Image 1 (cartoon, rainbow, N blue to C red):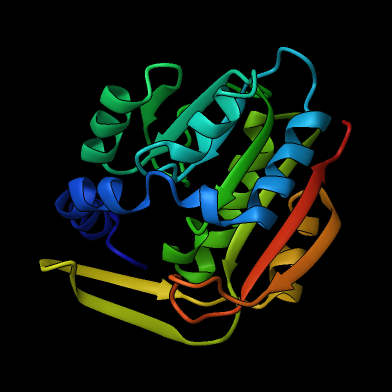
Image 2 (image 1 turned 60 degrees about the horizontal axis):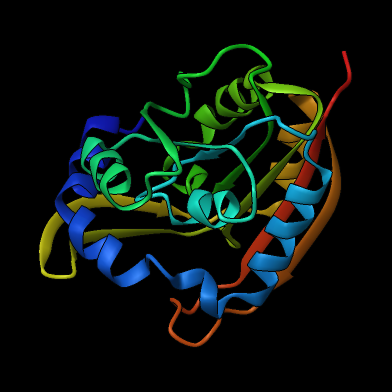
Length: 212
């Protein structure tokens, strides 16, 4: 099992650089914006949207700018503090994907963009069960991740010492685990990397929580 403290410390270390470099990344990601807009359109009016593994909160802020009530949740306290100072429209909470700081059925929808890639394979079912727990019946969840079987390790990132594993995932396996957690996968798609992104293939799954 991974040491989540190691992941937390690594993201604390790069929080300032991460924010400076990626705070406006959605400007160059038209497909991501379209998927987020679709999620927002289908979210129960007035229901908050959770951004799991939100980093500095730029995705939650993009949704908030379009009228959503958003809650950013991240393992890294430095990311949370950076987000609070930069995006006052977003509520931030520190927390782990395996023990989300949210009430049962609190959120109308949720997004988890490249956050499940730091979990061990055996932790994914627990993470998806937690996502289902905090999501309202028939609420939507949008997941994004790198496609493949490999694990890439970083011990240096933007000149900072880190200790991070990035696990690539197979869409069919993730879809199966989501189904086991009570979701119905409504959309699965892939794209090539955009200019300026790491050269990986990206997958998106849109899944709806069961109604019970």
